[in-house]
Image (cartoon, rainbow over all chains, first blue to last red; front, side, top):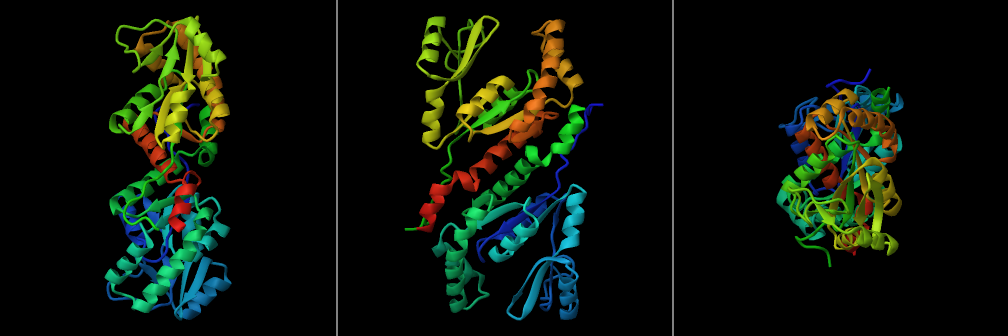
Length: 208
Length: 208
């Protein structure tokens, strides 16, 4: 029987926003989640102490170092990294479970983390967020005020290297205007839902 | 020198809306053109007589049969077909010229025409528009009131066969709600502009 009036795009998938530090991936992700309550945020686990404005299960899963190491050993992490003495990682089950149900999951992650995600989720949608220029990136990091000038210089230098990896990604967004960047991310998600390759089973059903 | 504040996605490309007759591709195309004056419509040439409400150079290029045959012989047509004693075809120059300039061109075409376009423009964006169901398609054709019941039956039968070709396309849109279908088409165009593969030269420039 053909669908009469009701149909749904079946595709569940993972959207990976990657960018050099300061390019604006977190702001884009927050913008998407604000206007799309049906999209889930992939929450990372970390061993670093909770900051005052952070909430367990919203910003991170804050876990002990023992628990984190256990998760790695049990293959519960898609990817993980140790940064400045603290562990950060992406728990696998939450993502797998939601993709299976047909949901869209979004995450923002540094460039190296993105490369690791691709090994485990090659069908994910990889978006590389670029700052409008390296000068602008430096200015934004200065404004943010969380890093020393030395760290900022290092971050900009790293960005130059990392941006060379963009050819491994599906889409590039130049974050010159945050609203435009959010619109482009939203458009990419809607377009991916319409991809023939993500809807094979649905259309088999349609043609029955 | 890196781009300071100004940048532009360089990609010019062709968007091909294909659908069985009655699925709504023309309405979607009109919706896109209405809100996107920067997108060009690929106007077809035809030898059929102009209808009262049609305008030369807006709806079609109305040409004589001799001129049409000449265009075919001069390889000025991407694709052409003879339907009910009249020729219909897509002039090539307008499209090539605008893609070269970085513009986006949209066309709506029947399923067989779409297959022919793909041979000449493999990098175009191919969108297959589906009616919500075959029953609904029949009802729409009856409402349109331009075909006999016999022709309508034939069109629905053809639609069943044609829809099997959708696996050759990049995207599928189920036209259940026209505004949603226009939004999805718009999103596909914006997403394609952000494709890494369509912006290689721009990013080479960025990295310099």
